Image (cartoon, rainbow, N blue to C red; front, side):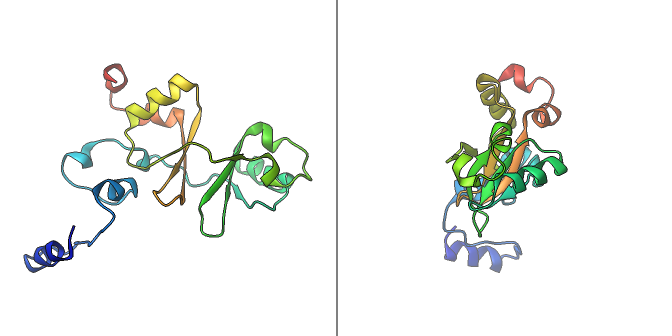
Amino acid sequence: MSPRAASRLESLGFRDVYDYAAGKADWFAAGLPVEGEAAATPVLGKLVRRDVPSGRLDEQVGDLSRRAEAAGWDQAVVLDDRGVLLGWLSQDALRSDPATEVAAVMLEGPVTFRPNEGIAETASWMDTRQVRSILVTSSDGTFLGVVRRQDLDVAEPAGARAEA
C-alpha cells in the first residue's frame, strides 16, 4: 500500500500497518500475515519443516551426510551466508564420495515453492511428478524449509483433493 494509505490507516487507529512496496502477491509469498478469505486457505507456509540439514558449497559431502543422517533426513540443502538456497542434495548425492565438495554433486537451481501456495494444488503437482518433498523459499530466494508429501495429507481438508 502507498505511504499515504498507510498513514491514513494509522490515523484511524490501526496499529499493524505496513508500507509494503513489493505488492500484495509478494506479501503473501513472503508468508506474512493475511486477513479475509485468503487467511482461510490452507497454505504451505504452515507446514514448512525448518530442521532440514544445510551445508555450504565448499563443504565435503561426508560432513553434510553425517549431519543429515544424525538428524533423520535423507536430503540436505546448500545455502549461502544469507540463507539463500543454492542447491539440493538427494539421498544419492549424500551417498557419493565423502571427500567430494558439495558443489560438485548438488542439484543447482531446484524447483521451489512459495509459502502461500495452496496445499491441494501442491499435493496434485507432487503426485503427478511423484515427488516426496518440496523446497520452500521466499521471493528473494531465502530458504524457509521443506514440506513432505505426507504432511500435505494431514493438512488437507477432507474432500479437498477430490475437488482439485
